Image 1 (cartoon, rainbow, N blue to C red):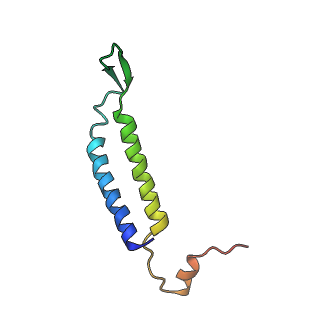
Image 2: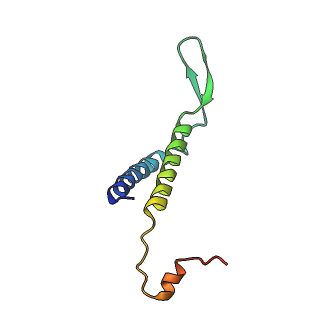
Image 3: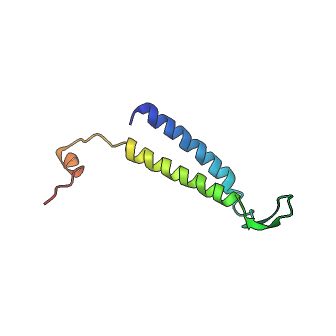
Length: 93
């Protein structure tokens, strides 16, 4: 992954994290079901649209975080000894 791509994903991840924090404060106060009236004679109750929107944002955050980890890798320390290099590899028997 290029440094620029990782930067873009990281910026988006930070934006989503900020939004999740803002919206996460509302989770405890939002009702699960809300009343609606579409003005055409139909009214009733339905699932609160807040929760599917929040869930989608959380899924996007998780997928972006996973992509950064998989494509960009974690910052690995430089190996300082033969043993530290060996520890980075699994030997199949």
